Length: 324
Ligand SMILES: [Mg+2]
Image (cartoon, rainbow, N blue to C red; front, side, top):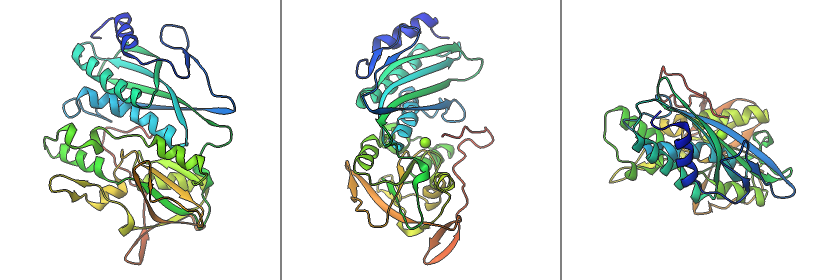
C-alpha cells in the first residue's frame, strides 16, 4: 500500500465531511447513524474493480472516486430515498502512487459533499493485483414508501429520466483509442445520481415501480418486469438518445438500449397519472407501456420485435459484477 493503514485512515478522516445523520463515524469500532423518526433504512453495496469497471489509463483517479460513489447513490435514488452515510473499503496495490489515492478521495468526497453524505467508515488492505473498491451507502425513506421494482401493473406507462447511451458511447470511443477528456464527457466520467428526482417521484406518489439504469435499459427493464411479473412494449423512436461531441450528434441507438452506467431512472406510473416532463431540471420521457404478457418488445415503426436483455458488457471476457 502507498501508506500504512493508519495514515490512510487518517487522510480519509481529515478530508471526510461528517455530521448529518452520523452520530459517530470514522475512529470508532462501528458508526452510529441516526435515522429520522418513522423512516426505514436503505442499504446498498457496489464493487468498482480495476479492469472491470474502470481502467487507470482511461479514468483519472478523481473520476474513479466519483463513479464509485455514484453507483451507490444511484441505488438510493432508485428507491426514492435520502442518502445518509457511505462506507468505503479499499484494497490498493503496493506500488500505487500517493497522488492517485489523494485524487480518488477528492473525487469521491466532492460528490459526497454535493449530496451531504458523510463518509462514516470502511476498511483498507493491500491488493495483490489492481485497485478494488467497495462502497456501501446507507440511506433512509419514510416507512412503507420505498419505491420497489415489483409495483408495475399492466397498462402502466414506462418513463426514463435524462438521455441514454452517452456513457457507453464514450466507453466505445476509449476502446477505439480516442483520447476523451473527462470534462468534455460528463455522461461517462461524472454521472450524477438522480436523488432529487427519485424523492420527488416518491413524495408525489407518482412512480409505481422504479430501478436505476446501471446495466442498460434492456437489462434493467427486464429486472423490473421480472419483479413485477409483467412485460413491456417500448417505442424505439421515443427513447431519448444522448448527444455527444461538437457539433453534438445522437449516439448509436443500440447503446441507448444496451449501454450501461447512465445512472438515469427507469420508472412506471399508472395510466392516468400526471407525470411532469421535467423534474429537478431533468427531462422525463415516456417510452412505452407495461403489458400483462411477460414478453418485452421493442416497437420500431409499428413493428414489434423481442428486446432481449443485452446490457453492456464493458470489459468483455473480464467478467462483470451485476449491480443490484
Ligand atoms: Mg440499481
